[in-house]
Length: 135
Image (cartoon, rainbow, N blue to C red; front, side, top):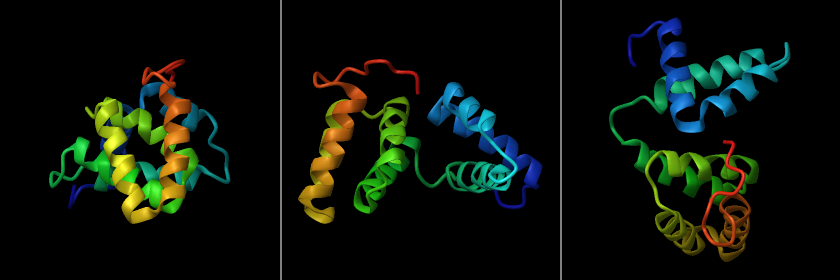
């Protein structure tokens, strides 16, 4: 959204953030905003969601694959759980997510993939369903 105003990027960011993470997730994040975190919430909405996630160069499926890979590699477990749910909303299947995690074992290490599989099992259940999906 090059050349967009902050207000336009914020509005676009909220729209994309809600589509990817769910209304419930975004509402919880906004409701939990404090004076300390208000600038942070504005920043991630405008920049991460309004700029980067809104770019036309990759579709959301591809962005989810990139995000999952990065989160696994860097050990960002809380974010991984959130983005595993988002990956389903962005069109990935459980089988494709499994392949992303397996692929990560080669480049990020077996322990990272092992942890990612544990988190995916917590998120999707042992049978690959999504128990208690509240996003």
